Amino acid sequence: MKFKYQCSECGSTYDLDPELTTCPSCQKNQRDNEPLRGVLEVLAEGTLPPSPADRNVALLPVPLEFFPPVPRITGELWHPLRLCEEMKLPELFIMNDGSNPTGSFKDRASVLVSAYAQQCGINSIVLASTGNAGSSMAGIGAAAGQKIVLFLPETAPPAKMIQALQYGATVYKVAGNYDMAYDLSLEYSEIMGGMNRNTAWNPMTMEGKKTVSLEIFSQLGDKAPDRVIVPTGDGCILGGVYKGFKDLLQFGLIKKMPRITAVQAEGSNALYRAWKSGSFDDSPSSTIADSISVDIPRNGYTALRYLNEFQGEVITVSDEQIIQAQTHLSSGSGLFTEPAGAAAWAGLVKHRDKISAGETVVVLATGSGLKDTATAMKGIHVPEQSIHTIKDVRG
Image (cartoon, rainbow, N blue to C red; front, side, top):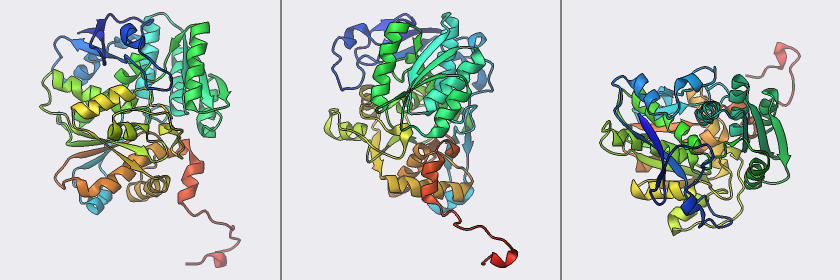
């Protein structure tokens, strides 16, 4: 297979180059407080091998020899029978990425960025994160012996910061939100060098995230689902889901794009507003689902183009619905996912009457619920007193 970059905005193509992050032509039109212009996607050309495992590897632009020594990065489709019956959706699946080495979907991007840095002889990787991408890159980087520098909002869940520090990353707490951390990390990269892993800025992030679609296809027996429900903040996971199925379309393995439903928190719904109005604004955001909390969705333009081209849709859910969904999913299936993953489940519950009972539906659960126990506490009742004897037990 041969690979090159293609601008998602103007269509220009470029050779793969670690110094090239966005389309130079489109980047000239970049304005403050808007999503990235000229996001680059990886375009594959050639003939795919016949076996599913070899096919998925062949669609990645970095040879396996450069990948760090970590367990296989993959999710597993979870068929929650009790919830299938309750929701009257017999072909309902959850893609559980909380089982990845650092407990989140972000390992998909981190492992490819790490491998590309290794291939290019770069040993320092810089990024901003609300928590999961940072702890993911720190863990993958630890396995590869790479230096990881992380800019993290001071409001990030402590568990995610602890993870990154345990893995040996250099962590800077930012007195502001993710958008501020993003800008500071780019400034740091300009001064200190290294590879910047920031979502959408580094083309390998969306390329790594596309593997979820390839695996959904493989695990369903080389069949595409009818619908995928995706928790959405900056639009990079959403873009990755589209990119994976777009590759399968390109090589004739599927005949049509699944219906993609992007779910945003009501308090952080920039993509939803743009989908409705046709343009982005920079209104401030706030939600308990930290992984999808962004003011400016960096992959917003690309995500919006995909939504419009393939008749996708965006819906919103409240923080209260996210909390309820987290408990509902946990108690109904045994899968404890973080608030962002619960947002996708809340979207399914809210949108259920729009979904046919015959559809094959996949909900993305993007990280372990243990990543943010403070939020999970809001949806359960914790015993207030300890018991001393069995007589204290009330049935």
